Image (cartoon, rainbow, N blue to C red; front, side, top):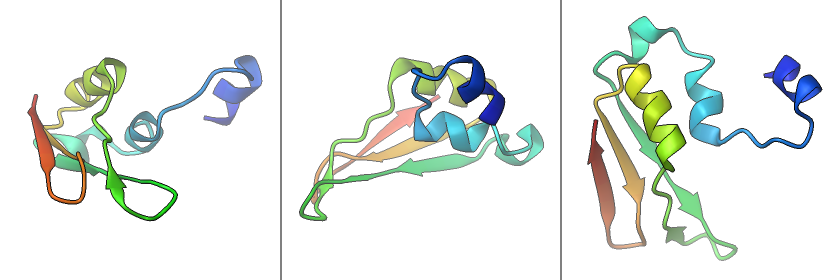
Length: 79
């Protein structure tokens, strides 16, 4: 990640990708991941991963992504 920042200082790295790039693919195969986001008041809010993050998760063998929608609902993406 540090070399990425050095050559692309204005690019952002999504949290899902940052985590997946630092885990051995053998450990992510058929795994589920959970993504949540909190607003300024510590309430769960919408955190569906973007298409790029979903593609990286697929390449890493992730089975499902659970993500927060709000305090009452969770979404599921089956990869």
